Figure 1 (cartoon, rainbow, N blue to C red):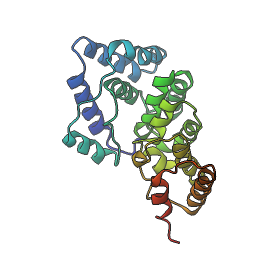
Figure 2 (figure 1 turned 30 degrees about the horizontal axis):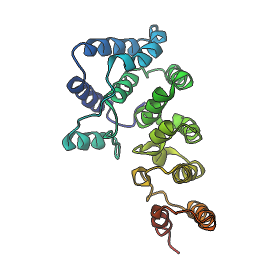
Figure 3 (figure 1 turned 90 degrees about the horizontal axis):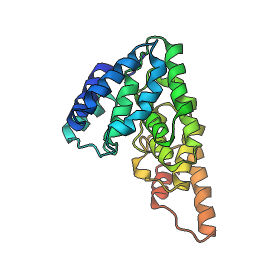
Figure 4 (figure 1 turned 180 degrees about the horizontal axis):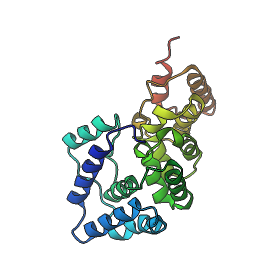
Length: 231
């Protein structure tokens, strides 16, 4: 089901939540985790997922380099340094969803994607590398690339190891081009150097030519990527 040590990451996230969440919210979070784990009561989970906004402040995580290294040892290149406490709580709650039945699990996760608001949707895309049945979510990831919501695009494109690991070449190239089109922080695209390819380089060169003809600035990161490809 999982491609990583679920128990270890689950414990790391749980410990971080206990450090960041107040004593009033913590029992509520644990109660909703139990809701996620039960099939019969899952219909109550989407409301709990939404209500995290009322229970947890949208504050930045205070996370040590040591903990970051531990997280990366479980899922290589996963960074949560830009996550909020609220996002961490939501991702951890999603982790508690019972994944023993693939059809039931994927149906439940897809329903969350379908009914999420902007912030919830961004959290779900950030959680892609953490979901069970990782290969199943390729199409969902590709759909995220097509989003016009900046906050959602950030979650798909930046600090997310899932796209580089699972997207095919065409979808991957679309992600990189979309990052340039929307002026994202290119340095935060995980796996960019490893997945440079001829079609991507050609598309980036064409994009640079268009911007040059229009007298527009070209992100210097573009040439760094182009130069990775042997001439």
